[in-house]
Image (cartoon, rainbow, N blue to C red):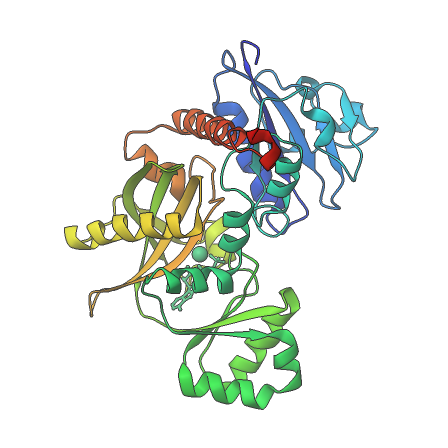
Length: 372
Ligand SMILES: Nc1ncnc2c1ncn2[C@@H]1O[C@H](COP(=O)(O)OP(=O)(O)O)[C@@H](O)[C@H]1O
Ligand SMILES: [Mg+2]
């Protein structure tokens, strides 16, 4: 490794969270110390094409400068992103091992935080920020994640998993089961989306049919959950095996639930940091968050989300987000800010954790012959 750490940032992505990713990438690029890092932009266009830009020097003024385009450097490339180098579609990261030391993948949702990019980076033997393949995949699949939580003995709201094919074959039976086991209102979610996309609350049978059909457009695996009237509490976890937790925060959504609009357009959503909750609830959250993080074998960072039914003082796991929103105004960085770790220090620590994890992995032998 040279003097500066060469940090490749993968952003954009074939994802509904493309724009969010651009914003996050810009915030990260503008926050890091340019004496410590050389920044290499790796843009995944909406259609899945990868483009590598020249190292970024100086502060970016807007996200549009990060929308690199093949063969149109004068119009679309920012002066500081310089010349654009198109990278082969099929093997975007294999050529860059010589040019970067570590990758920060800032891509959310399917094809981003679901283990696919992580798998590519593993194959390329590159250190990267955040969870590995398995934790990413499980963390993005609500069905699998619930199975893992159940196995770890973590409390959750009642749920049912249904395959799209089951739903299409026998709607009546599925509806009967949902009504018997969960009742109304219930939440219907595609297992594998994130950012509340395709999620709806159903208060009666007609709404349930609509909700199921909508969710089935996004995924072949569907989760239906009992509704719980609860406060939404979230905590940040940072680390590989030794874990640091942040203060607890609360999401107070003005709308009926914390949906996509509320999350990304800030429509009436308030983040209360730290959350005003009793100490025993906070302690429980810290313990459960670490348990959930370990159950998934997460690494780097995760935001762990809870439902707290205040009336019955009952805490439920909601989910672990292995690639939480990461703009300076997102919950995760703000939780750590309130815990004494600034945005740029957070990035430093994440890069260090990525390098540590990669180094630790290099210790594994891959064939018994190596023992001789
Ligand atoms: N079982 C539930 N009871 C009450 N509210 C829920 C339930 N499930 C989800 N919600 C609401 O919907 C939002 C999005 O659901 P969530 O499972 O967290 O999906 P995402 O992965 O898209 O964030 C939650 O933040 C919460 O406001
Ligand atoms: Mg959520």
